Image 1 (tube, rainbow, N blue to C red):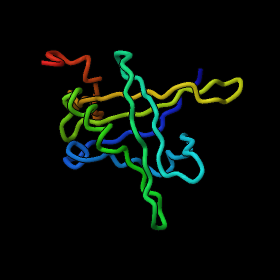
Image 2: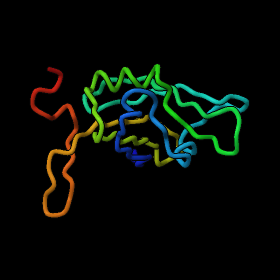
Image 3: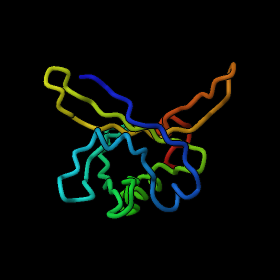
Length: 132
């Protein structure tokens, strides 16, 4: 299996309270059915929990402007205790032999320090007091 980074997004207050905007180039990794503007997909987190997200594009306008819909996204935000300046990272795993997408992965991370000019990010689940 080949793991491919799709995108990393540092969260702003609107991402915490509404929807998560997704970079347009990421649409290549999803197969939205012809004639529709949304698709549901599952992503596995660091603790092997499965999250169901709904990716949607707008119906009008020049650019598709993809987002993860509030109904699916906010459950993830609340469960992980995400706050502004945390980040999420999405990956996909692809079978190298036939290039079929096998699964999507999602990580919720928090910056814990800045060391030697680099930000150090840790999965939320690995932080002390996670879930309290």
